[in-house]
Every structure is written in structure tokens, then in C-alpha cells.
Length: 113
Image (tube, rainbow, N blue to C red; front, side):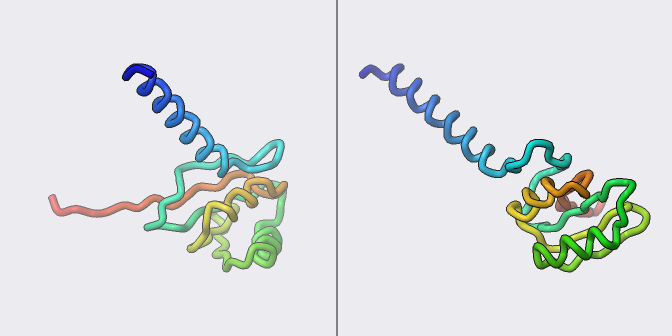
């Protein structure tokens, strides 16, 4: 096997590895809710937007019992905030029929000018 063949094989394996890592976090449902941002361990929270015709308090309470988190309901968003969440819970939330979208918190910083 020559050097260019080894490079091609390594490239192929890298692409297959990247694809499989990304695919493992995709929801296992037909029509998942939209997701915005990406999981950041330094800011492991998210905003869950509830579908417009649903009672956000009832949805938040039901999902909190099911997935064991404490929701912070915000009327302005028609949804709720979860402070500590992991990718597995977000995957499951996206498959719930009452969830319109999930947006991950993103770390920010303020610097002096």
C-alpha cells in the first residue's frame, strides 16, 4: 500500500467517524422539533419553546416529571428554561409532540473595551 492510499483510507475513516458521531445525537422520531445552537458543557442549559396551542405550564410540569428536571416557565417565551440538561434529554424533548423547538444556551463573556 502506497502513501496516497493510506491517506485516502485515513480520510475515509475520519469522515465515517465524524458522520457516526453526529448521527448518534439525532432524535429517533419522524418529525423532531427544531434545535438551535449546540450543547456546551460550560453552559448546559436550554430554552424549550412549547407549541402555541398548548398550555406551557402543563407541558413543563409533565416533561419535568418524565425527565427529572426543574423547569423555569417564562410566559414571554411561551416555553420554559432548563438550567442543567444533557444531549440525551434534549433528543427526547425534541420528539415530544408539545415541543416546537429547543435552543441551547451559549457561553458568552463581556470584555473591557
